[in-house]
Image: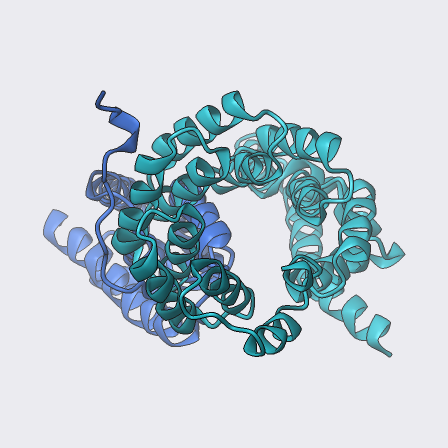
Length: 156
Length: 273
């Protein structure tokens, strides 16, 4: 009598790299913007062994957020050329932060289940986000500004 | 054996040294069990293998081997051992639950659920199976199910520290500070050697402090709804051109956020003083 449930299904995976805490990723969103937090979140998803389909979904959500931000910047009267772009209003930056935080909430929700699994079965030891987080904020933030500036320049 | 059961694994090992019979698989099992409890996984694996060389179908030794391999991250090897044990006795609830813990670690939660369900259908009062049942709910992030299954565990084993710990953790998730504190106090009382639980209990004790009282509604509602609500409110106020209201709201929101980040650390420092 063959029993489906008692058939081997486990293979050894490479040793796990410690993931980052979901809560810490908030700061990357707040300080670094949407691209920064997306990078960290997607890297963390790999650490949490989240399926590649889900990770593609995360990339898609980031693309949608960036598209929304670009649209917002283009339709704003201040972004007429590169010179006035430099004097971007505080308002656009606030929108950028709000968008980044909302994206963070969505990406964190997608990581929650895998994170809970990690906490239960791997004693929940996390890696500090200082190094990678700061890099993401600086690099991601700069890249995002360049992307937005590029979009404005291309449109005019 | 009795020493092992009482949790004194080191003493069991010492006692075993006089009168150890290398031809008796049972001696090897006691040795393996003690080593497992002392977290000496490689030694446990060796002892189990010695015992299995004498009696290859000894389910207790196979179970110990599976457990030790699980903790050394050799999940495939653990599965091999436990399946060998299940081939001998497919109706043992403990073995089925051990297999469930292995596949759960590998991320196969559905299969783990089915295994535990089968274990519980064979022996509904099995403490190990009930414990794994609750852990599986916890691992998939289902708070309500975790609490329900933990209560089930506590019905059969009222002194089980994991049951209280899971309920405590679930209450923290939902922001029920008082219930969480009660649950964690019980958990710590029942297993004072568990440092993680003690740490979590201290964290919850902090949350009960009067300085953190303004943060309780935030804990109940949850971060996501709170932030969404704040953003929506600010956008609405802006659309309605209510500039002063918007500025006041934004100011209060910023102060609240800063407070929620500083206050817990401050309370922890106060308590330590």
